[in-house]
Image 1 (cartoon, rainbow, N blue to C red):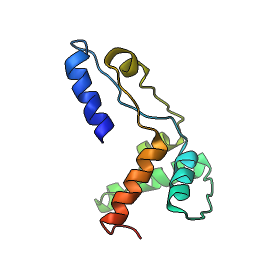
Image 2: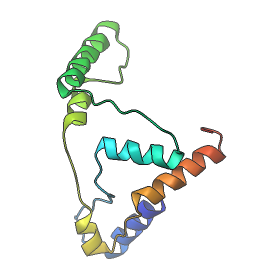
Image 3: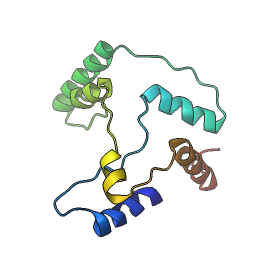
Image 4: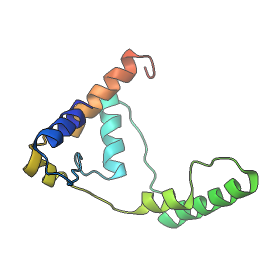
Length: 123
């Protein structure tokens, strides 16, 4: 959070009028990200890769359920499709133009897990 706040301040002070800056971090796949979390937590986990067609079908079913029952569904066709995309972005422009500095993702995960533990959200 501090990194993003500092990035906003840097953009206000050093950014070019009308420009946008992506205050992003490291590019990780979902698998890499979740493995990193389980490593920080010290938990052994089994990860099962779901074929994209299964995920997209579940999203389509979610859309239908949402329309029929008028209740919000967490998995829709749109977010299922997004989960299947390999979208990666870079903060290089922000690093070059406004001196944005990324916090390593492992450090951010450790800090977040500590906060969750301190506030009794996880053990």
